[in-house]
Every structure is written in structure tokens, then in C-alpha cells.
Image 1 (cartoon, rainbow, N blue to C red):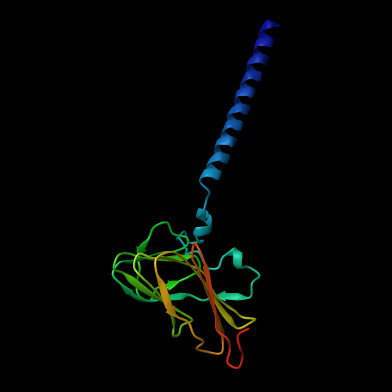
Image 2: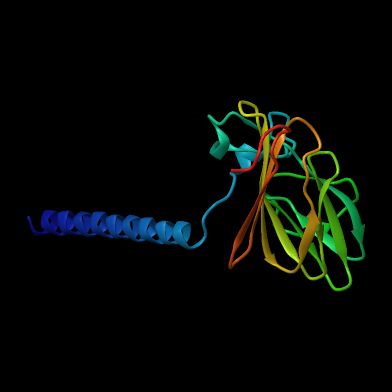
Length: 193
């Protein structure tokens, strides 16, 4: 009888240890998920052929919106200019003609500048030296025939020209840590309210 009680006690202790280890492991994994959130999973980034596929711009946050993304084009650069895609970790040297999409960033360094062309026309923004700009949103609303852009400038200089060049209205918002500027163009024959 004593042998059976010892065996049952040992099995109970073993079950208790396994439960505590699983509980500790669950808490540890949960803590890691909170401290180091995950990005896109490897299966999301891989296509069926086993090659890394680029993540399409305008992800799930834009579902149900009648807008199509319009890229901002890097039309001029001078000296050290870098860009970072929204889903990349590292900054790379920017190339002339680069299409910047939602949540992409552009950074200039000392004695450097860049020009972003919006709306495939005469509208542009010039980024001065030591600046960091994020293209938060650049899209065309197909229902209202309006092009909307939102840029976030975290540091540096930004200047440019925004004017109506077609029948489409253009709305550009520039957000800084301290203020926001909204520029709206109106169709011909309409007046600003």
C-alpha cells in the first residue's frame, strides 16, 4: 500500500510540475508578444513559389473605402537621401523616379534635398536638409473625384507648390509635431467656403 501511495504522489507531483512549466511558458510567450509585437508573418510575405513577395500597399485598413492609392514620385534628389518602405526595417539609398506609397518615409541629411511630385503633374513638395517625412496617405477618392495627400514631417523643412492642374480637386495636409496645415484646391467655377 505504501508503494502505491508513493507512486500516486510521484505522478501527482509530475503532473503539477508539467502544469507549472506550461503556465510559466504561456506567461513568458505572452510577455514576449507584448514587448516585441510581430509584423507580417513569414507565410504572408511568401507567395506559393517560395519567393518573398512584396506586401501590397493599401492594406486592410483601407478596405471598404472608395479610394485608390496614388504613388508620390521622388522627382529630384541631391546628395544623401534615403528612403524606407513601410514594411522594411532598414533605410536604403533613394533612387530618382522612386514611387513612394502609404506609410513610406524619406529622409535627407546634411546639404541634401529631395523633391516629391504629387498628382503626376506640377504639384510638388521640396524636402530640405536634415528632414524626415512620412507619406501617411496619398489616394484618389473615386466617388468625389478628389485626390488627398497626408504627409507627416517629423523634423526639417518642407516647401512646395500645390495648385489645381486638372478637373480633379486636390487636398494636401501636412502634419508636424505641433501643427497641421490643410491646402484644398477647388474646381473651376467654385469658390472656397
